[in-house]
Length: 212
Image 1 (tube, helix red, strand yellow):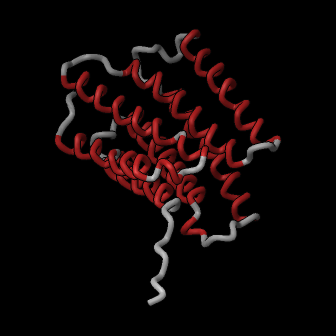
Image 2 (image 1 turned 180 degrees about the horizontal axis):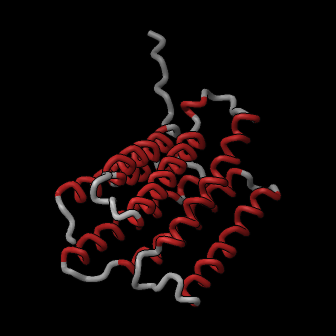
């Protein structure tokens, strides 16, 4: 099944965080800078995915590249927030562990590379969700000095949670063969991209008030 107009419009929403990230790149901290190339890669991968689908080609192998890369970048971003602590080391250690698990999925033929990576994607979403909730609890216990709505970490964590919950719901609808009747991605993706954009916009310096 090929891509329709709605699918391409959804791809356009991915330009929003990428464009804002590039615009504010010099103002972003080290962790958030990692997100900009990820969003660029994700956009290109989705475009290639769309073109392959329209040509009747199997685009599923792409997902087996995107999923571990996405997981790695988010874990690295989270680890930067706790740089120098044991929590940072633990977050980084999750990356090779995740790779080892999904590699076993492939080796045991549980998840062939030419099929949908439902197990890997579900594991990624569950793993990121638990991590995001723990970080959110920590933010609540140790709130930043700035208002929460100007805290980029909160925007990113909220977006990751919405993204993961939306994906898990989508995977469930696929298993139940009702994915065509519930437009999960059409609802979730724009919300998530607005959230990512909001995280980047938190780095924009407020205008100085004129003294005149």
